[in-house]
Length: 373
Image (cartoon, rainbow, N blue to C red):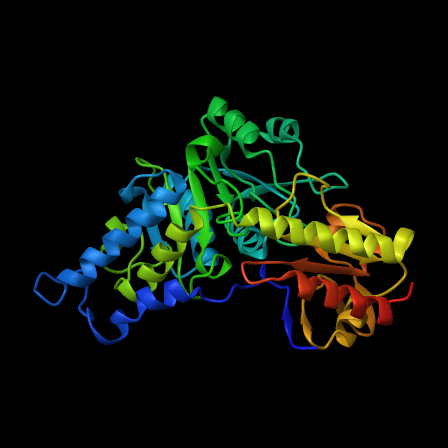
């Protein structure tokens, strides 16, 4: 069996159109975009064009897009930047128990610097109750940070409802949309967010580039200090090369029509696994409110990592970890109260632009031969 890649939520290949757009910047247009001479002009123009492409995907303005080194930096800029810019005593942040470490780690960092954080629970499908957000708000709350879609199970959160609550209380609202951009609509006005994180390598751009949407008029303290790049919000000479890659990827992502084919393949995989394993397989995540490319399933009574170890030619992932010979449940599945006997058997299959039906059928056939439950 030729290698099969079903780990698009971890990282996507660079789209050929993205690579082609970046190519000239490896040899030409090498000038510093912030310089004022002839060599900087092409780089500066391309940087702004890329900014416009990112803004168009999100329904934002050009000056609301801050280029970063990736999703982690964008999350840190949103969370730490808000905390230190507003500089309130007893500052309080609301987030969820299933956030990516790039949100949870900055929150824990701020707890060590005088802040307090409420980690909201989720239900068995991974959904947050907006009323839990409302109940968690205090007079000291300065930020709510809730991911748009979960990276492990794909559950899509009710951001518009949460955004309305945040606006009602005058609280900044940030979302980590690294997994949702390019897969489902992410217009910032419809989501009701003030800040939104993009990671380039999740939508067919290269690694090392991302962006933060920052609503006009909202100040953040930079987490990288230096010169006044990105309107003073992120120091460091801008990379036209990487920005062009992200911009081109965002331009391609405006067309969500191809996702219907990917969703059909995901459902084909799920139906085939149900037909083969019956009650021996379980779905993790919301049955309908989830990303169209994501399928997290648990092989009941088995260990997902062991199954993946036998699927040598299939790239997929499991959230379980092995420590001192003991398998530990994924923190996301633990927060969803998935029983350990089920959760340790979890495997995430995430499909993408280049997945084909024959690969889905090959994976099912392989699983049928090694994962007898």
